[in-house]
Length: 299
Image 1 (tube, rainbow, N blue to C red):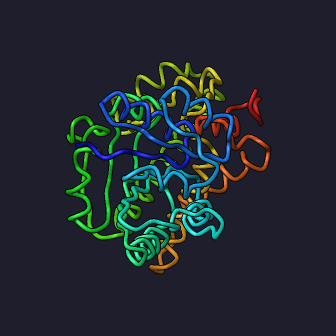
Image 2 (spheres, rainbow, N blue to C red):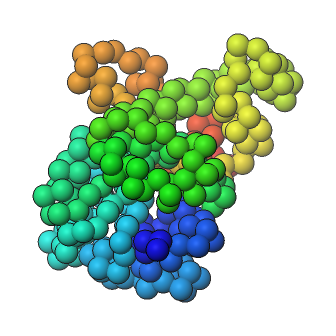
């Protein structure tokens, strides 16, 4: 029999992962989110229980997927003494998908094992459409036996396992994810500066995109963000606030290893500027608003 699933954190990514797995024949029994209205609507859609506390999700599910925003939120949903996931966690399995510090994943694994449970980090390198369609690129870290046990569920989220990778012990997948987002964010900032300078020179930015895509300037963000930068279309798939946070995770890892990462630092500074202007909720493509001539902030 398939295990019953619960979700803690049902924003854009968590909700669509739940929809995907429901469509693949899994019972989603319970959901929780600080946004109670959103959690209630999703619960009604999926035939699940909208819970008042994370611990209630754990009580109703065999496998609990957490998709939260940062280190503090991850710790809160597990450790809260009035309703955290560790209350009654014995025998449960937790799949933690947030982009958080690697050390927190290590910490959560130890805490869950002490409580008689198990956990796995499953870091995502994709966005909202892939969460819904089951084509997420998943990087996993933790005990390999836990990974093997969860493979049927994870495969449904990752194109039948084609996009599923086991990296190593706890924290290693989070390290890889931090590097992925660091490079992605640098590429995004670089594309914004290249297009912005091109516009200032009087060049056609759409022609520039075509040239970039066929030369050494090519990167994934040329395809995903370029047109949006030109059109000033910044509907959120990956927020500027998350870009700033994730660049900070990578920088902290660099400090631990005694490395200087000037490009990552400059990129984080740009995303921090967007957040300070009150635009942390727009897509990372909004960094172009800081580099295109005559803009200065999102329209």
